[in-house]
Amino acid sequence: MEYTKNDCIRDTKEHIAQVREFMLIFAQGLIQRALVHDHSKLQSPELEIFTKYTPKLKNSTYGSDEYKTFLKEMQVALKHHYENNSHHPEHYKKYVCNGCFIEYKEHLNTCSCGYSHFQEEPDIKQMDLLDIVEMICDWKAATMRHADGDIEKSIDINQKRFKYSSDLAEIFHNTVKLFN
View (cartoon, rainbow, N blue to C red):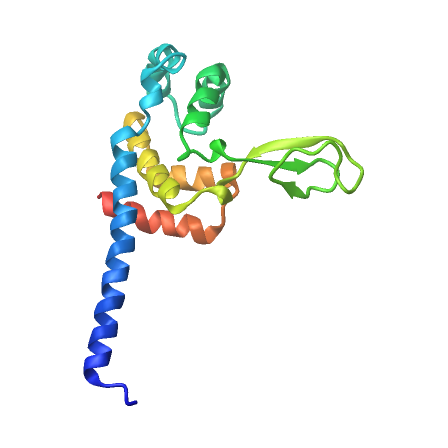
């Protein structure tokens, strides 16, 4: 049987409908996330700690020693926040053996190399695209709260902090052009 122009049109329309369906599922996921973004900041213990530190963070430079000190002081709130918000790389964890530097998704008692000390690190590689989109939007909005915020610099700082590829950094740089 010959594949006709009408067959091609039918198959193409079916493909278009499937892509539309998947994109709408993704869009619905983004809309849901937009509606509930950072609601945990309105609850204890986050509310009390963010009330104290938001003005301090506004006047600090992202990534500076002062900024890092504030983050250490906010650990109770941040731990709660990261546990409840998957758009942060800290929501996901990996464990790196301090002996051979192999990465694991779970903490082990002993690595195959025999070492038993592991470093817990955020794992951006476990995130999905919904997490990533919400994260880059969050980063952009966060830079707007800092007196000297700069999303381009934040992307570069976060590349070192979260150990993501140059390709992903470039995708972030391309994406933030949408916000101008």
